[in-house]
Length: 410
Ligand SMILES: Cc1cc2nc3c(=O)[nH]c(=O)nc-3n(C[C@H](O)[C@H](O)[C@H](O)COP(=O)(O)OP(=O)(O)OC[C@H]3O[C@@H](n4cnc5c(N)ncnc54)[C@H](O)[C@@H]3O)c2cc1C
Image 1 (spheres, rainbow, N blue to C red):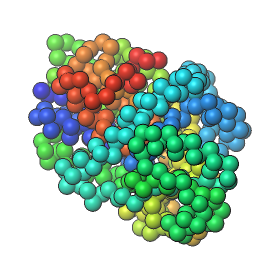
Image 2: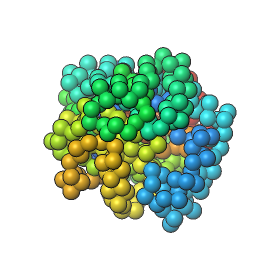
Image 3: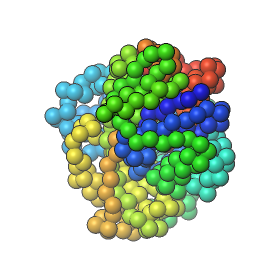
Image 4: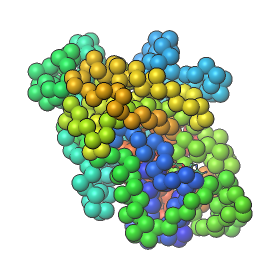
């Protein structure tokens, strides 16, 4: 079959490979350039150990404190608030205990399959050198937070995720570049990180082209539904195919709406600073719990980033946030390169209020499929999503229940 994928971020590129495996003819359509969006500059974690959604009873209680600080880990630009209200209302609903538990079940189903799916694809494409298996640390500043993390570790262990709670001495042995300010950490020996998100997405993109995928630069503005679906662009551009997969990240909402699904997709903008070619003071990814940022020693340089900002897809970045992240990081990590030597970046996480992506079939046409909204975990979940989409395209029952990811769940 001829299958078009709209969007050449990490999710679209991963899907291209899964479809090529099944002998389909693949057309990748991208309006900007491959790896243009968050797939270019993310933190590079294969964070398969994270099984807790952002929307939770606990986070709901913390929101007022976060919002009081416009440069804090979570902020909403006041002008954007009216547009965000429907998303926020669903976020509150998703934070209720029962909904929270449902989201954990969905998230864990994807996360626990994410690393094997990545390793399998890296092996098949000869790209294993891009995957570093040095584990990851979630560090806690005080004994109370560390104690609370034990309950999370127990849940993770219940899903078969390896985790060990360690004290300050073991933490220092693992990462001497951290300042001696931590009560301890959750140590995940299996966590992997990648060489660099841009490099790896491009390497997978090139590998897909070598395997026969065709790339076209065009903005898909609509999908017309005849006997076969047809992608529609500007100036008469049109491509008739057998199946369409919408993998357009934070920009997928209008296409899903045209396919009959009013999905509450928004963007959680994230920021980072990278120090190209700097080895950096840490040897593995570290998440600084309670501060909303992570640090990753990528092959392309040391990167510090995170934060969540709601301001839509149009507003310019506010790198005062990045400076704030850096200033905080410099109180927790020894020997950071000077801020001025860093490269600043902002990216658009494609986010649904319940922290789960949309993976499924369009309401208006059973030949159009969705794979977007992976929020904080699109790099992690790209290949497991690709396997699920390949099953949908082939008309097979996917390996996991897709009800939690349904476009009509809201
Ligand atoms: C600061 C930050 C740190 C992060 N860290 C991590 C991490 O460590 N681990 C992790 O797993 N995830 C992380 N993420 C999340 C991850 O980057 C995203 O979830 C992921 O990149 C989304 O990939 P995607 O392919 O769905 O979307 P995108 O990368 O946005 O790709 C979608 C593509 O579709 C194209 N497109 C859109 N509309 C159209 C159209 N109409 N026609 C044609 N093309 C179109 C866009 O131009 C874009 O290139 C992070 C994100 C941020 C912002």
